[in-house]
Picture 1 (tube, rainbow, N blue to C red):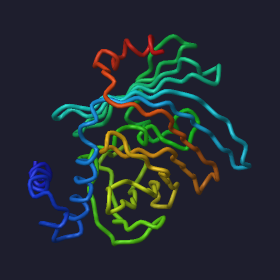
Picture 2 (tube, rainbow, N blue to C red):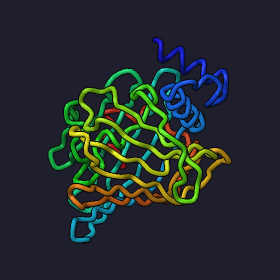
Picture 3 (cartoon, rainbow, N blue to C red):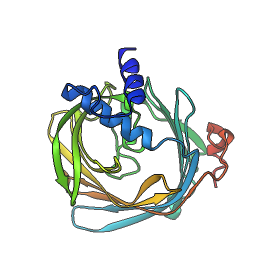
Picture 4 (tube, rainbow, N blue to C red):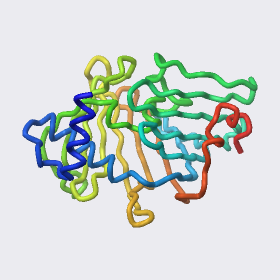
Length: 261
């Protein structure tokens, strides 16, 4: 309740520094502003190529489509990911319901078994289809899922950034903390470091080649996750973003997983 009241106050003031008298308050204010700038997209869809890169540099591509539906009020966003290639994964689909005050719900449809599998909250830290992205990485990052701490200002990739720590509140998270570089001009996450349960640097995500859609929404054309411990990586290449195409709730149900095309 206290955090909810603080977030409401920050929105009303409209400034990340208005009452940011502590590093925790400033960190939260930055996160709230970044979240606020992404509001109002309604729905979207995009083609996505996921490229797995092993420690020797060998690449394994996978093609998929991602559909998203923005949450209303206290509801989190919903997303549907559908695999088209390789042939042995064609028709695999994953549905995610993001929640602001509890663990997300995720279901995976496996056409070979013709069944929908619920992903346990205890397994959210596991790798998503062999990639360097965990299940928890590919759900919507709700502000309420973390506590925050502003560290410093720093230049990254030629842009002035806030550097902010965020600490997951979910006891099943695979991370003790994340450190994000958020550019001051547009509040985009340019880089995120992920620290494992032993507090060691596990992997780094860089989002590149951001493009502006509908004069408001920034999306990266490329996301690269590098695992420093396994020396493996995963590259996400986005193509053909579309917004406000008329997606409906009925397209984001467990029953719709089996019919996803």
